[in-house]
Length: 425
Image (cartoon, rainbow, N blue to C red; front, side, top):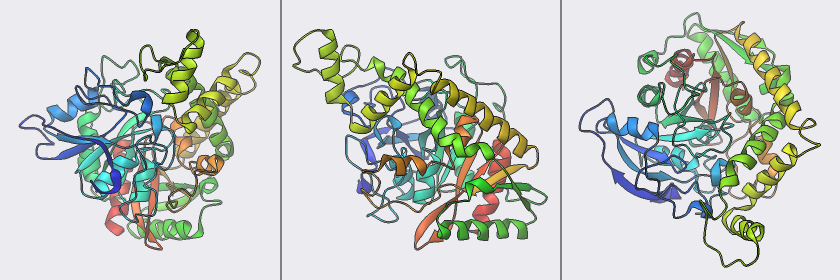
């Protein structure tokens, strides 16, 4: 297929009837599919075929969706561009010289190119919203606990959620409606929000809606992005919404806290890939430790190795309190700031990404630049809140995304506001 959106093309039919009957859905390659390989974009799992379906896959099939393949991604979800996949990069359907965003770049590209009616991604620090913004489609990061993570290959389990991508807000909400709800196999899921109807919230009515604009999430953004953002806010005000500034002072520490927590959880979760349970066979000689190291040297890419090493360091004796414990303190501070800001507004709005889509290869030599690009999305994951990225026009021919953040289990509110953005774009 064009744009290299898929790692594996496979047609998996769903039930004959259901709310998604006749629709095609692509699934990110870190979500388990029975009998179809699930690689996580890594050589480590290049031949891994799960014996079971993830809960979200079961629910899609029961709803009548036809799965059309497994989409490319940054290796184990670690990246902002979908260039760190062991199977090569995906390109942006809007501009083939640019990245689609990451780590769910294959899912966003499949939807933007019309190769699937919708897709599933996973969002650990913006991995649904970033590619949605870069490819000009809609992406929803649900409240932590609304959607089961059973069958999602864990990277940073306290942060990540499975979320839908689709061409429109209503279509993304229809998929969310199918996959949301408690799951006996995932103890972190909640009853709250289980019976909510999300698609009918996309009515475009923002009369009287209060929108808070965190000033800290505008500072430093590309002027072209900021211009489109303010034009969209003007459109929402013309439709009856009210906007005002709010402050999230903690977000200046959010990126640092996020990467310490995410890398620490990655160092633990990826320890299972040791060549015994998972991983390639090697001809390494020596003791068990040397064999273990050889498998991980061969199976993991550079970005995964970097994060495992940094996470292991942050958790090591003598440094746990200095790094990991302080990052958790910062996380609590971020959540408190969001609670206060959302007590003054129904939703918060910001640019999804502070920059336009990178050119291919532009950020690979500068990981810090890539990490800082997540500044507007990672605070939401630290606070376990829902957010949506919706197209808000273009700058220099490239898509710009607007992010709307709501209170926990406030998906209907952000869907309503996003549908108003969509109608004015």
